[in-house]
Length: 413
Image (tube, rainbow, N blue to C red; front, side):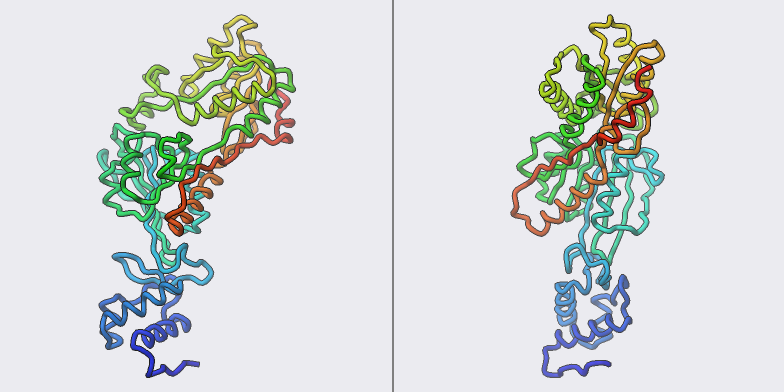
């Protein structure tokens, strides 16, 4: 039953209640766009100022979401706006090129993005923008009823940097920014100067800890369980194999096209790899096992690069040869185990993964989704409480004992 308007109420209140009634009766269903701020005054025969005041009231209540340069949308009561009355434009900046079929995006990045989208309940299929060699690669998701536009931007296909250009970021006029795996200090310094709420994901360095939230994997819990399990199986000569990053002047496309020319001396240490090395050393010390600098190696994660290291280690005399390796990735560990097995040599191994794994190595699980969930929560918290201090959050890794026991068979030849 329709309510009769209170003719004594101010005009903007009457317009507000009229729009509320039309939303309730389904004239404007959830997710639909209201007539524009130029159309409504003509339809309702009131001034634009009156309409804007009414829309602002409804937005503050969370009944509608006002989206800059697009209009006002009816909120879904079952999927409330992230921040009532506000439409957020969030830029997610990646250190790889991004294509619609994810051809140039790792499964880890897909997991991170999935975690962000799950926490923000973004589920509308994305659309990609065509990109030439000099254009940024991107995909965009829009959820008007949830009050969010998510822009996922990667480096240009022919870029000689591991991030989108700063010009593209400025053009986006984002309310908040998230970086995925970007470790270029110069670029991150530029982002921090924008004054936009910022979360650095998969970056364990602390240089920007006073201006941005950071989310990274804490390798210590998983390494502690994995090394204890390998030591219980008799391993005593542990080696660490870390991962390398390409240099800032090398594009990801060039790495994919000619991986053989990327030698270890052309790479640089991954900050995440250095954190894992620190955890590895701590756990060996806790276990009373020897820590040798000769047992620390860094190489590309790709098999064709770490195979040479595995062959060199397998050729060493037994006192200098590892009987266990702790690797940047579980596929590194598996590859080294297989090369040792071909030579009739025993080797145990563990490595990090965010996917299901049933091979001969022990997986140390690092959940990209959990990292994405954490980053999404931190960003919303920062938008709602901009004066809170920046936080550094380590998402713990794990190596379940039950799974470790089930992988005991077939590890040694």
